[in-house]
Length: 66
Image (cartoon, rainbow, N blue to C red; front, side, top):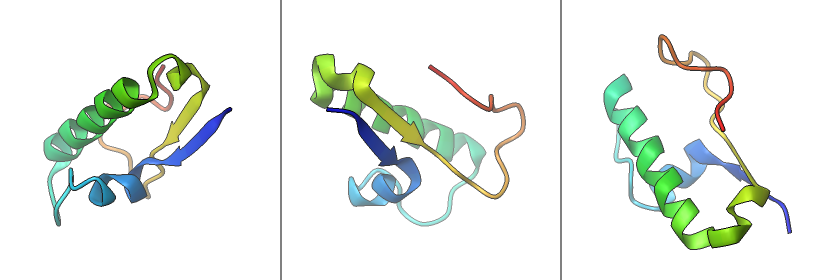
């Protein structure tokens, strides 16, 4: 089954992100969440699309990442 996950909505729900943070803190939170999802979804992780849609992406952030 394919999954479509809104990353910025899931971060605070998982307790990974609390309040405001700078670009490095946000990047660490995203990477931590992706690791947790990879671990929990297992082989189904390839069926997951996680979207982080922000008004302004951090400088140097790729538009898309696998």
